[in-house]
Image 1 (cartoon, rainbow, N blue to C red):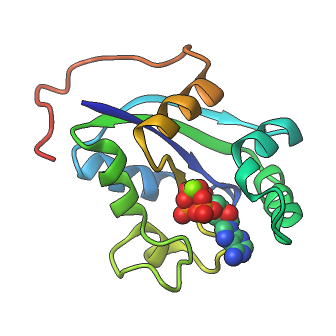
Image 2 (cartoon, helix red, strand yellow):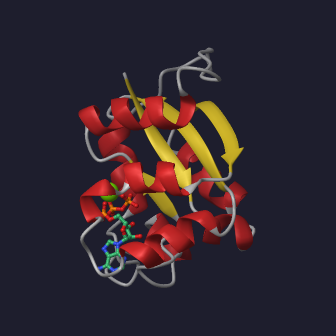
Length: 147
Ligand code: ATP
Ligand code: MG
């Protein structure tokens, strides 16, 4: 069983799509173990996207991620990390496959709806970053999913 970190980005909150996106995760059999709304600050966004710090679009990513609160989720299931990345789709919504969250709801690369951890190592770091070990719950849904 894996746990991954998801952020529902500011455009998702602004456009009233929180429920729609969470439904996609639940429908796939993933379990929501943690869920909280957070206002991100410069320090946490800089840490989260530090590998993009030298890109010309870095200032606009920071502005985007801080303009409205985000919803952070800890989500588990078998192969949860890869499964969520597949549900999410390509970084640019215009290149994502139909049926993916970014194709179905995203408009442009700077409004791509969702962040999802891309490896087991990243997931571990990102879960600590956004949940700090608190507010993650385990419970039974009566099945472990069929992923
Ligand atoms: P995320 O980490 O947000 O889940 P990702 O893993 O698909 O997205 P990354 O390469 O990690 O893609 O890029 C992180 C974020 O930086 C993207 O989600 C997007 O918001 C922004 N980004 C990446 N490339 C570009 C670009 N060429 N122009 C504008 N923004 C970009
Ligand atoms: Mg990424």
